[in-house]
Amino acid sequence: MQGSVRPILEVAARLGLDPAVVEPYGRFKAKVALEAIDPARATGQLILVSAITPTHAGEGKTTTSIALAQGLARLGQKVCVALREPSLGPCFGIKGGGAGGGAAQLYPMEEINLHLTGDIHAVGAAHNLLAALVDNELFHGTAPSLDPLSVTWGRVMDMNDRSLRHVVIGLGGKAMGVPREASFAITAASEVMAILCLAQDYRELTARLGRIIIGATFDRAPVTAADLRAHGAMAVLLREALKPNLVQTVEGVPAVVHGGPFGNIAHGCNSILATRLALQYANLCVTEAGFGFDLGGEKFMHIKARAFGLRPRVVVLVATARALKLHGGAAPGDPNGPNLAALERGLPNLEKQLENIRKFGLTPVVAINRFAGDPEEELGFLRDACRARGVPVALSDGFARGGEGALELAELVLKTATLDGDGPRHLYEPDEPVDRKIRAIAREIYGAADVNYSEAAKQDLRTIERWGMGHLPICVAKSQMSLSDNPKLLGRPTGFDLMVQDIKVNAGAGFLVVRTGPIMTMPGLPKEPAAWRISLGEDGTITGLF
Image (tube, rainbow, N blue to C red; front, side):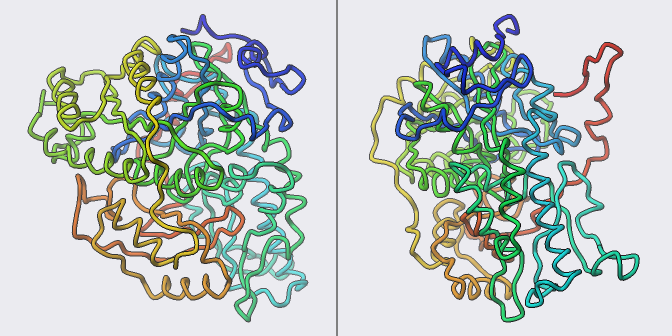
């Protein structure tokens, strides 16, 4: 495995990158200059990896993506994997790192999971600069029309800290600022992060930053970052962060890791620059959309793919026996041997996600991600169930065996990716009314009967219409644990109404965030955080980080 790791300039050469556009950060990671990316030359085939509705621990999309890329490389394909950057919050929280695992992980894993090239910190700095400028305007009174009670722009940090969800700032006397309630979110939830992932160059980056809405005037007109003259300095802080990061897998397959937008609040996938870089310099690009297809896949298609003319040639839907058993009523973990009855009861969730893929005119392939201890009877049952439904299926054992364990999946993907369906299709047109677009997603993707709106959300709809923002695509923020907005409704729920709490205009990112249920933008640490397991040895070796 690690014997295949190469110095980063060799990885760049394997892709065909000119050394002049590669900016090494040490021996095993580098930035790639923007002039290396030409959208007209991004002609490779795109493979999208998504999943069924996951468990709290996830179903291994990243591990499967990396293993698939390694399997494709073993078959002689010129392949590059494009993924998000991990956030520090999960690394020290409950989920752990986001660089894959076992024999299917990115290298250097520790550096990728911790700081990489500092992009996430740059996003935090740019976000917090705008927050500081907002409070500076309130303190000096240089923006007298800005209603302090309307300010929605809080602060961020790249760590889970529930104590910062709601705070009071400006205490300590007149010289310390204007006292008011505020909040912190994790950096991955920042609109600046979404902007970084959707901007194609420095000009567009600056323009998108300028469109960020931070609050409103007393006359209820939007106030933007450009109104506060903040966007130029913010763009400067993000100058280096806009360049994609080049790393590799443990088998030496090139990987572009760039951007990490929150899967619930934003579109949950890596930057458009990273995807185009992979499509330009490789024949196949394997990329991932966060959480289940009802969240990440839908957003990928309506927000990223539609805006930039991307079309996945095949969608790999990751499924696990443990998740389907959970949807079938089994207890988490279910350690008592094979439970085919629960597995069968959980299959409707898989069926719904397959239907969702086909609604976009895309072709699905199921990857059964093997976990240690999975009974062979369950894996065989799941394989037979997919075949009985006419779905191409392969077992993936990438965690244990790397690219070798994904050869069956890689061969199936190559065979299926040659098919040319009638897609892509979309569930709504941009100029349709906002409530109609939300209803289309709720009914077609989630299986809801209807959509209900709180009074706050109804007011938001009127504001969006008054501001002329109704053309923006929809980005639904909901639980990833269910097809519905209720995390306790497992399997394939039907007959429920989706409840919209509020709608936020992310004008810089270019989408409307439709919040359903109590979505946390600042996670908390669990009772036994992963940070307890992590330590630094006398020789500088990191242990416990995965």
